[in-house]
Picture 1: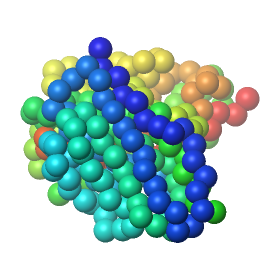
Picture 2: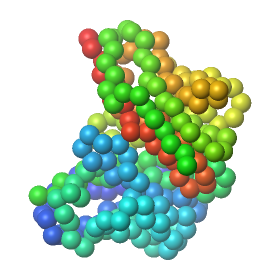
Picture 3: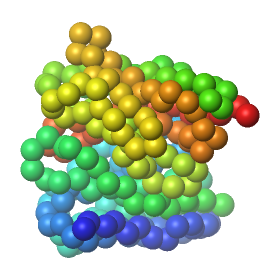
Length: 114
Length: 112
C-alpha cells in the first residue's frame, strides 16, 4: 500500500535561518507531488506541485523553493526564513494519470519562525 | 476557472443534531468532488468523494454527500453529530490531471 512520510512534525527556526522539509512517498511510482501551506485561520494554499523529477510549478511567488531530486521525494526549502513563513506545511501526492481521484496527505509540519 | 465555495467558516451544532456543511462549485469539466476532514495539527483525510455513478455518496464516520448538478452543489451531511466530529472540513473539486481546487474550509463546532 502507498504511504507518505513528512518530517519533521514540528520545527522552530529563527528568522533568517534556512529551511528544509522533506516528503517521501512509498508504494507508487511517478506520483504528482504537492506542497501546501495553512496559515493560522486560513485555508489551504498550494505552494508548489510537481508532475515529474525536476519539474516544479510554483503557484505563489515567495521566499520558498521546491525540488524533486528523486521520483518519490519532494523537498521544500528556504535560504532565509521570514516571520511570515510560519504555518502548517502539508505534503500530498496523487496518481499521475487521468483526472485526480484522490489526494493523500502527510501528517504535516508545524513551522514557527521566531 | 474552477472554484469552490463553502458557506460558513464556522458551523456550530448541538451533539445529536443534524450536521449540514455546504459546498458549491463551478467547473468547466464534469467534476470530481471531495470532502476532506482535518483534525488539529494533522493532515487531511478523505471523508468521501464523487467521481461518477450514484450521486449520493456515503463516506466514513457516518457522513454522506449528494452531488446535485443542477444546483452545482455537494453538501455534506450527518444525521447525528458526535463530539468527535469537531474538526475542519474542506470541499474540493478536481479540475485537471494536476490539481484539486479547495474551498476555504468550515470549522465544525459541536456543543454538548
